[in-house]
Image (cartoon, rainbow, N blue to C red):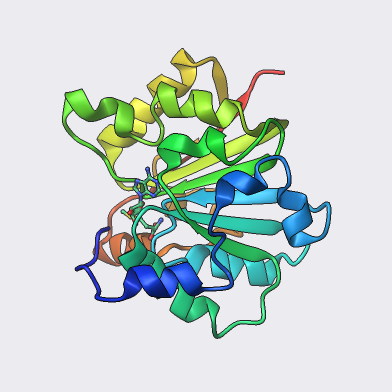
Length: 213
Ligand code: SAM
């Protein structure tokens, strides 16, 4: 998702109190930002942030961080975030390519990847957020029992992700090719993209990947 460049969005993002502006400085120290020891769950490519805002209000004992590459998109999340009283949700405008610059070993308990960009050309495979290159980065930030939860409606990207997880030595559980007609639907929180695809009747695929301990 890349919205039309919205004039002033960079400045608004730069001044917002819920956006962490120099995330590298928080590396190893995210607990201090939240002021508690609660687990940290991160969504990479959060778009307009509906999913994370809903989770943060449902689960006050979990700390949430949303990462989004573009200010024009993050701006939409900030507008909604400003209307809430949440104390367990921060945003970062950042490219997840450099994730290990901002999170230390064992800092994250869960990573959500929702409807990540497919990068359909083979030569761009490394940019897919479920490539083995990205899984290596997640491995360096996740707790030993941490997990990556990935949803998509793109079957090719899903099959690629299953392969990459196995290649990278991760295990898989609760894999489904049609989440909305599966035993795993209960408790599912829909993202903006998910709502659109479900309305069109597209099946949603979902996997949970974790490291062998
Ligand atoms: N997760 C949302 C949803 O399901 O409604 C948005 C999905 S949208 C297709 C993908 C989002 O990921 C876009 O907003 C895009 O800017 C962001 N994104 C893509 N690559 C990224 C990266 N390397 N780091 C941070 N955000 C990224």
